[in-house]
Amino acid sequence: MRFSKRFVATTLAVYLAAGDMGQALAAQYTVKSGDSLYSIGQRYHTSPTAIKSTNGLKSDTIYPGQILNLPGASNNYIVQSGDSLYSISKRFQTTINNLKNLNGLTSDKIYPAQSLKVPAVGGGTSYTVRKGDTLYLLAQKFGTSVASIKSSNNLTSDALYVGQRLVINGSGTGINKATTASRGASSYSRSEVLLLARLIHGEARGEVYQGQVAVGAVVLNRVASALFPNSISGVIYQKNEFCVVNDGQINLSPSETAIKAAEETMNGSDPSKGAIYYWNPVKAPNNKFLNNRPIVAKIGNHVFAQ
Image (cartoon, rainbow, N blue to C red; front, side, top):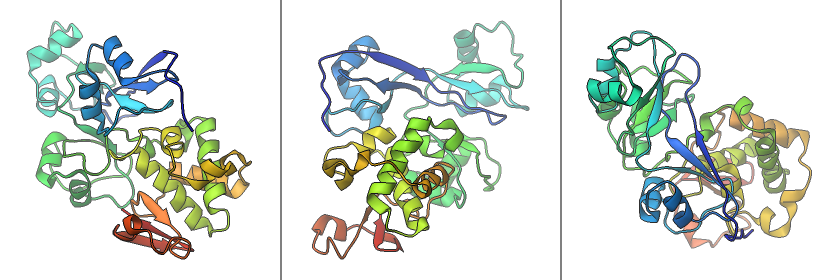
C-alpha cells in the first residue's frame, strides 16, 4: 500500500509510564497521511537526518500510524517511592539544578507519582520486561552490557520482574525505541487488535494456535526493531512484506481464534522467541536471504528466525 505525501497533518503524543514503576518514555510523534521527514523536522526544529538516526531509518519513507521518536525532546519520569533528585539526576545523566530548572522547582522535595521532565538520555530505549527476559539476554539484544543496564536503572541485583520498565542505552541492533509490543492488549486500540488479527488470520489460519500467536509476535517484534516501521500498521503495510496485503486477504474478517491470538500476543506471549522473520520452507525452499537467517523456532509449517 502506498500513501500520498500531499497533505500535512500532525499529532504529537508523549507517552508516560503508568502504575508505580516510574520510567521515562520518549516524546513521540505519530505519522499522519501527507507527512514527510522534512515537514516533521520543520515543525519540531530538527532535521530529517536527525529523525532518521534517532529511529534507525534507512530511507526517507514513513507510513501513517508509524511512531517516531523526536530527537532532543524532553521525557517525563514518574517519581517512585524512595526517589530523590540526586538518584534521578544520576539515572538520566544530568544535574539536580537542571532537573529543578526544567520543572520550576524551588526546593529538592519531590513526592511519589509526581511527573518530572527529564532530559532525553542519549538515544536510550525504554523497554518493558517480559517473561523469560534476563539482563544477559537484554544486553545481547540491545548491543550493550549487563553492567550498563544496571547502572542506567540503579539496579543493585540481576533480578527482573515482568512489567518492570528499563532504560537501555545500546547500539540499537536489537529492539528499538518503540516498545509498544510490551504494552499489554488492554492499552492497544481495538482497531490495532483487529488489524493484527486480520494479518494472523490471513497468514496463519491453517496453523496451530501457538503458530498463530507466533506470527502475531513477529509483527510486534518488528514494531520494536530498528529495521522496521515503529507501528503495527506501518509494519503490516510495509511494501511487499506480507503476501496477504498484496492479495487482499488482509481485508478478510478475522476468526475468533485469530483475535484471541492477537490479544495473547499483545499481552506479551512470544512463541517465536523474538523472531522478526517467518516462512514456510516448503513453499520458499530457495530464498537465499531467509535461509541465511538464524532460525530460533519451528511451529507447525513455519520456521521463525532473527
